[in-house]
Length: 475
RNA sequence: GGUCCCUUCGUCUAGCGGUCUAGGACGUCGCCCUUUCACGGCGAAAACACGGGUUCGAUUCCCGUAGGGAUCACCA
Image (cartoon, rainbow, N blue to C red):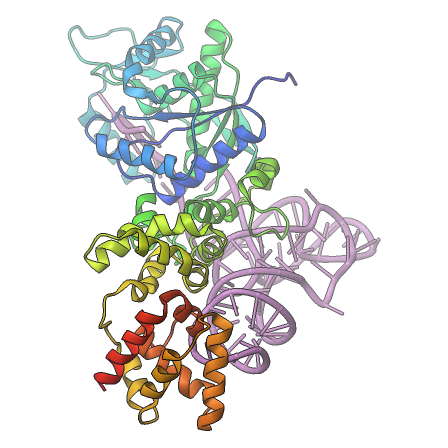
């Protein structure tokens, strides 16, 4: 085997956002190329002019960038290569590997109806395959003259050897009657011209591979230099119910994972990597490790289901591991929006310093944002129902006595504050919780929060005393 | 319907003939830690779809059955 450079590609059609399945296909291609020190290209398959949109292209590029799946060279736009595709179609025609077909769409539909009624496989019957009595001035398509006998075996790197009889394949359209190329032609020509050595794509393309291979071999027979690519068809991702992934369960654009669900790109990447691929018992795999370990033989053959719970869990792991400054920057806009004001540098500083404790209590950026608000709210801070109950059931005058002690507190550090609370509990014959919980309610406005003394230390004496006074007064 | 593919705990998976009383993770449940909630720690329940072979021996190999999926356009 010659040491040719590995070239992979991700080739989405811009008819929608970059969904989770596409992102995984892109990731596998990227990883495979990086693992082998090869190239990874991005090609936009926009030959369907009616359904392709610029917004979709932007969303795909944006999603790829967010996930850090950088591509080599320029993005290839398939539509711009239509002339080249047509050129190949005519080469095939001239060499006798393709032919003109004058069958009309209505005619073909009638054929299919008849086949359906007779419970026959619905295939083009090759009615123009050997005719040369071409009508003048009539539109025609160029069809592949595919081999009728024998069988083709693809040694798929994921699925293993797969064989299909040529009799099962009909003569596909290469060039439409308007002269534009079909997908089958375009992929094959583009993959060849881009030097793609490994075609890693969704399982749904496995059947196509046989037709595409016939085309490749025909071109190789004509001019040489068209080697069979290595194929690897990866199983699709299904929804939690086992059915095809729909918008209901996860077939969202990656932008939704970022913007609406508040996920981190490395978490999405790790989750996707482990969906259909494994490396022993390893769960959390860094990008560097993934590049080192990833290979096609680790890819499973069965479809996997999308599990949002596990994704959230993985995200929580990466959230806890993430740098506090980075998380602060990520949630700052959301925090400002929720607060209805710009954040001062003091706000950001407080947010940053609270992050260490905050991130242990969130599994996504939305929760992180929501959990951080109480630090920055202006007095009097809102009180939720559980907090109000805690205050109502506190010992009479407790808050005032806490305030007196805190006002006299010289050492405003976490251990000192805790010692103060413990001493007070001892003096009052109360459990620590009987003091801490009402105090938590007063200081945070909630029954749950990061460690109370951490919060108090961060908030500072004036703010804490003020909040306690607010709560005591309103009680 | 034809063709092709798939089948280990609810889910993602480890396992590539004996190491399996089938391992890990998420989820679930219990306990611990503890000022709350988390985090963390410990533990529990939970799977080789079914039936035949091959073999001294099958979760691992082969064949059926069942179930699931993909695909059959002048869409990609």
